[in-house]
Length: 392
Ligand SMILES: *Cc1c(COP(=O)(O)O)cnc(C)c1O
Image 1 (tube, rainbow, N blue to C red):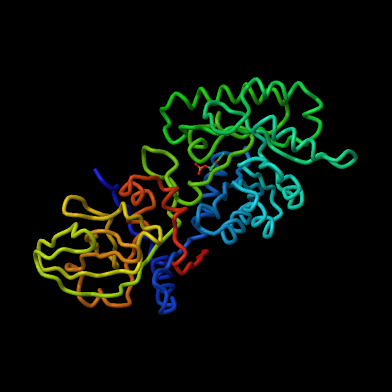
Image 2: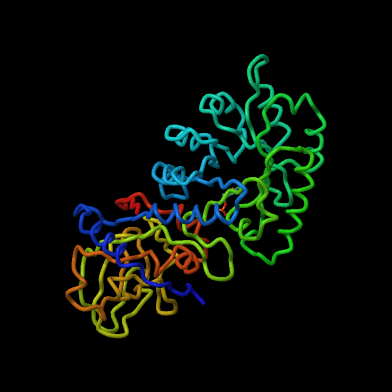
């Protein structure tokens, strides 16, 4: 089956706030993306309370999963978050401009980037002997050794020191004394699947490899890992997707609050007769006389073409107030067509808005329609939306 089940409607106060923000949008805004910072803060608190006494850091790579690190990270800092994980040196630089937090760079030490990381005070997550040597060689005798993390591979075969290299580093003072080891970490391959046997195998292997570095804080859990239970949390957790309202586990209800609401502007409302086709490829033929609402978002805005409807397949619906609008035909680069026949006439108007994403069609619902994951929906969010940050 395509798509998911649709959640409940939002609370009244927030609905009123959304209506006010839409009314305030400039007329040339073709779409409005509302990021609910209060929901991010509540999601952070929930994970932090669950994981304590472990520290809860935040994965804010890829511009806080597309939502805007400049707005998102200060909101997290207000809740006590003091450690951030980014992917690249450039992201570390952007975050340093707004925060004094400890910043770990997950991509590690790219060749030649040590001076930049030192300058901005970011910590590479070292994942090979080459990286450890380069970071150590950069350390100038007489200065303070520079902080860094070590990534050990526990079975993902992506980044990280193999066990024998971790042991070698631990037993080689010339390597270990040339930097300030602040964290030992690894990453779970199947954390979203609580029944997967790989989780326990990786946890046990991690505990073993981390024991080579006694007294150094340990971190294994992403969002899914936190929910696997206390043994996975060690001294520091690194949630990302759950902060942003995405589902941390494959099964059960999503315990996190949605964060992103997307609205697209109606450019045209028109009638078409039964038997006419809609959109590229004539992929959908109308089964009745239909009122079509054409809206100004498309795959260039991260509303994937894979979401398209056809005679054989439903797409995700849009909403105007409580009214549901089935998608019609293919998603174009800049436009989507919806069936507005059953919406009262006065509610479907040129210049009005259709809700694409929120509590009724969640990031995960959209992902399942497109055959992908919520992470990709968020990080694909286009730049043409007017972005509004709401905190309450
Ligand atoms: C992205 C990432 C995280 C956060 O993962 P989520 O599944 O979004 O919680 C944690 N650790 C590493 C190494 C990552 O790359």
